[in-house]
Image (cartoon, rainbow, N blue to C red; front, side, top):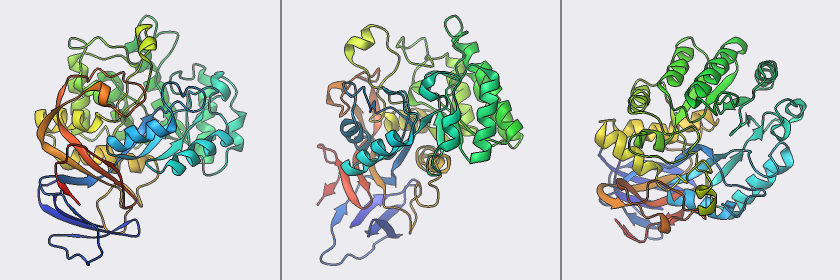
Length: 402
């Protein structure tokens, strides 16, 4: 495969030759053999495909909201070729058997690879952690997403085990005794606690969907101390503030001051990832107050429009946040996340020059719960390529795809 006439993230012409699932060469005016598939990407920008550090595909047990097939299709349509899945399924993912079943099914479908995380406490019971001692070596990420471990002694033991066994703790920061009356304090207090535990034990910690100015500053201070702490922000916490939108997500949509603090944390390098927190729910569940929204298919456009067009962030930096930064968190940086010879040919072609309108009913996700319905954004995904194979192609062609 030869992709011709694209632009890279700095606007220079960029041809990419793909062979055996890898990027073989990058340049301008690369020649093509007679039997080479050629994609004319004139007018489009080529980037490494995206990696999502925070996603829900609802398997096992909640497939009426989303399943691996529809989640994979949504990911491909959003430019993603790898997602990190949360364990708040039914039953909760607390064992290797479930991990391998989910990952193998995603591999079989072939549109998007998946890493399935394991719960910190068994079945989210808040106390049982013996299963962490027997996890196979290839299971490296644990999280209590949607809950948060309340008991300080239990969490301290978790961090000690994680350091000993080389696990990464992914933290949903919410003190559930406080969140019913003050979700801001609930996020801030657990962020400070977990950052301190990471500093104390030397644990690899990734803070999920950081949303307050205080929480992101706690991460900043830990990183300045040399702690192995990273964090993500979601597109919806960057795009919306609580004066513009009342839509239930967890953590909540925050103030304009928080949005500005998150943008600044992106610019100063505190935030290294965009995580979608893609969380499908039915319309009936949303009417009853379920927290969450689908986000895989709107993530790049929302971030490009907000960060690059409105805040002046270089596209190269956004590409890092959606590809190389997440690759580093997920332990994939030796083969994914960069437009570089020898790396996996996981690529995305985007139209950054023309505005489009989001239509929820056209999303590939099984659920359509998105507050971005009707929003006008720049950065439409035109084609996604995984391992040198096309996994998504827009119906409205922005390039002459042969």
